Each structure stands twice: as structure tokens, then as C-alpha cells.
Length: 116
Image (cartoon, rainbow, N blue to C red; front, top):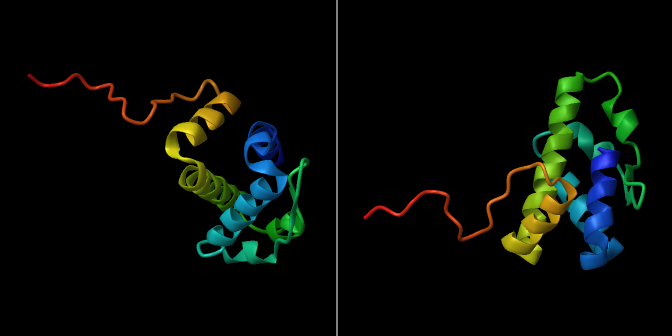
């Protein structure tokens, strides 16, 4: 999670600022608490190293698959919030710059051919 967060921070902080990035990430974590209550034990996010205070302690003794799902939920919420705040085109383009191997279709572009 820290590597993913750091990569996103490096790409997005110049655009939204470090406080904006931290706010989006904190909100994403709070939204994930609904599905993964153990995340309520985590505290502030510190960037640029992207460590969540208390995350390791909250994850201790839990099924690794559940912890992985919780981290994916945080990331998914973060990307959703990013798209809401800066727009789908810009948000997804910035994410694509972090992970260029992930397929990306710009908004408004359809890979399906128009039917006559």
C-alpha cells in the first residue's frame, strides 16, 4: 500500500497539493471503514512516505486476504474521489501515468464501432 500511495502521491501532489492528497486519502480510508470496521483504528496519513498510523496494528491477526481487500477498498475509494474532484479525464490520465501498463480508455472514447 505504501508503494502504491507513494507513486500516486508523486504524480498527484503537484496537481492537488500534499494536503489535498492527504485529505482524499483520509476520506477514502474513512469510506472503507463501512465495509472493514477494523480500519477505524487507523489514524492520520503522513506523506510522502504514505504510512497510515496504526495500520499494521489494526491488521495484526487478521486474515491477509481481508486486509488486502481493505487496502483495495481504500485505493478504489481514493480513485473514485479523485475522479469526482478533478474529473475523469484528468484523474484517470494521472493514474495511467503512474501505471502505464494498465489499459486506459479516455472518457468519451468507445472502442466499439458505430453501428450503421
